[in-house]
Length: 328
Image 1 (cartoon, rainbow, N blue to C red):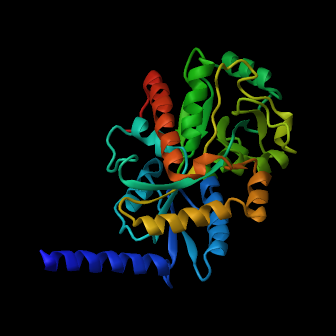
Image 2: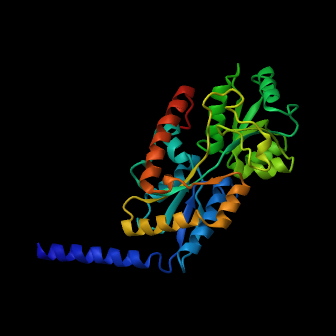
């Protein structure tokens, strides 16, 4: 018994000592479950730089693990060693994948330590430059007049653009469904839209603002409850709720997670660094330029973020089940 107590005490001391020196000279990998260059990847790279500033001598790197709507990357982190050196930056997919994928290799509410929320990213409904419509109302009339003839792109099953497009189609209720064309990431989908190979897409402002400003795509609406009146580019477009889609309010938030069982001292170090990073003027400026809003409320606390995700799961599952369209 005494030997067992001694071993347990030694283990606790070892963990405590390790937590005090975390992350040491070993890099912290932020796994992005989507392709490099996409909107979530951009958020992760800016966050990695902001968090590096908060922990002297640290090195935060971004690693892309792509596939299956983000579930492959998420599963990698869920199964990683719980030592704080492998983290996950995931978007609303943390809440939507249990509804879209009825068989998951991990449990979003049980297999992670929630570190806190990062930002809210509105979505924009955009079309190819050749579309004859110039306003959302014109666009809606155009798709109704061409029901069954148009297509909508997304960045892959379970992606933010897939979820947004699914919810929008459910709300607009065209006579015939649009043909859905999945791509292997936001980059290829956007390239196809700009080139006119697909008709429309719903994507994060982190990926669309530059394209809208450059005139390479047409924008019709934002997915927030109210128009983004303070944004220099997006202020010109109405919200879908304003256009008659009752209670349509979709933002693609991002959160940071560690494997379940990561020591409390390490998760506290990471959460403290995250909260400081979210106050970094440079990080805030980069987010604002992309139409994203850095979180300043209590969702930066692990427990509150987890509570928020649980509520999002309920809301999204109801919408996905109503549409009857799943990723598996």
